[in-house]
Image (cartoon, helix red, strand yellow):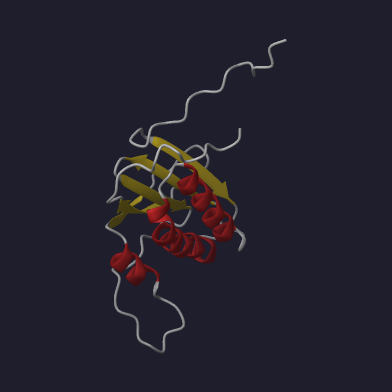
Length: 160
């Protein structure tokens, strides 16, 4: 008797193949933590561990700002186009953030864009237009580039 799974599982994507994931979350304080865990799992599964810490820090900053200031749902999109990872955080607040400035040591907040400007390889933002679902918002994105080759072929595959 043949116990092969049906339908057969697809082959994993090559390291240089593009991919994209998106996670939507409500305006809930748990959202940024869930976004961080999801990002960590996706990057580890695709063999891009060198980007995890920086991507996690920046995603946390942007997702936290969305929860604090947008008062609505938000989403995080991860897009890989070798050798660049682009992470976009979109929300319902229409105002783009101000230009980052060096925060004073006494400031209790206001460091997010400063950190983004220092850690990301590139970053930016854009307004989102109105849709059938309601008023537009904004999307803030950052890019991080990989400076090494693909992981060794012996990397274990994720269980399906």
